[in-house]
Image (cartoon, each protein chain N blue to C red):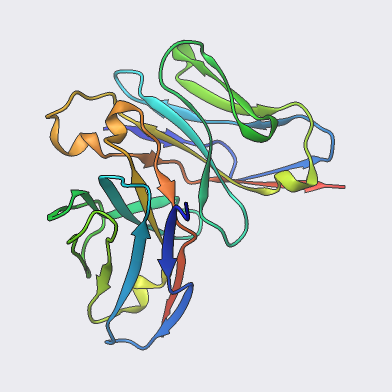
Length: 115
Length: 120
């Protein structure tokens, strides 16, 4: 199993551009998550999904959108990129709810710079 | 609301020395507890977790952590550091919730991380 894969690994965007970060998992996990990681700040949840067709906001959703049309894929869309969105983005998945003690599995990350 | 505090954003040890990374949580009910490791330019990897049962939990790469309810702590230790242990370590907590508790079912709250450096 590849686990959680993310593309691209690196990207530089100009202010106002848009892009989609791709995330795919092959573990048949129902739950998927998008986080951003900023230096010294830990990870902040952007959006999550509990299954195909169901998504919800996390702590820092502004400026982002998601969709979940299949169990495997959970793309993150940035519209009108801003410098504040410069960060490292991680996708994660879990078999079921973390509230039952299940851990999350993380992808390798996408490093995004907005200039 | 839950919170996680990792004492020390940077810990430096010599190779062969004891590693101690501190994690305290704030929660009215003891949560599920996790330690993740992030090697440079990689994603997070689970080291160990505590859900129930024995309070001393053993993980990968010789790490272990002990859940102490009275101290609301879940400190990570390793008896002898290796150069390969140099990485950032994150403590995380999740509330114990029943199905139907809405958004809390997903929530994993991370500490800000501790960067471990190992000197030769």
